[in-house]
Length: 394
Image (cartoon, rainbow, N blue to C red):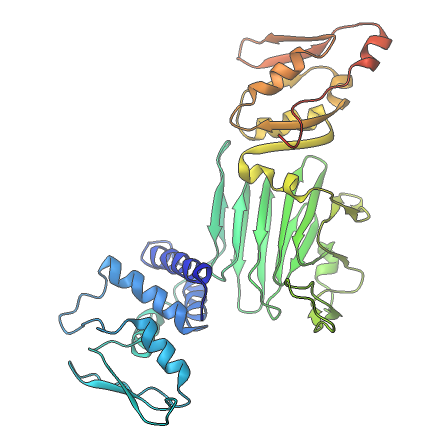
């Protein structure tokens, strides 16, 4: 029995596929991905057919939808150990053998059943498969966020002013985060690794959730669910060892968890839930724990959460969101660590905070930017100032 959540997800994915395949930009790779997606379960077939019916794409005069809901046909087919016999006659019944009492069960339908429609979909798309395709590029403007459902069922959510390049192949999934920040929710597929290239490093997943944030001098990789392998570009080209690991429990306690094999080369760093690593031009940092994962994804809720971060980094991140331009003209002030929460839709709260810091002076430049400087005051006065915006729990 499928859940309401699954039904909603398949309906959303089906709608995504319909829009993509009926547009002008669909590639051959995406069409192959659709055929793979729709073939995974009868529920996906049903969801796509429902979209087709709603938008009126099956309009042939000889086509009539079943009187019996497709879900009933699917459930009946699942209960049967024999193939469903479909008779394409306007009012002929369909016999499904293998009922509880062994007797055949009859469901009256009109033309078009799920299996027939699936074959028709595959045939209709077959002619498209050899059309040229390539990488897909998704981007956001300053102040914009975007969530993209990929053909393999994975989802990429882009933060403001971000760019990602996506290539989906039969045996691998390759993405390049070229700018900004993205949250990756990876559809589980151990046979087809999901590689995200960022700042000279590669984050490999087979079905998990993680966040990658490109900053001026490093890329921060944070694992939210499951685990990932982090490696250099050179390591990613090495042979895969497929080291076994025990996936985390899915909510129910497991005495002996079944081992899965993770496709990672020798020397790759394996990160688990609530761990973070920084990728720099000089290599990778040691993994460090993340105490509050909600702060990592606060940007998806239009918030900027910072804890003991240099003020300069906070201001730079606000600039990425295309809000009021603020220039910290004092190196000492840029390095000062601050803690708090700022609503991205109300960056003026940062200026309010800065105006309360002893010794700070704010002026407006001719181009509208706010220039923040630190006046000379007694050292003891500065050391006693403890910058703090709203509590991170607000």
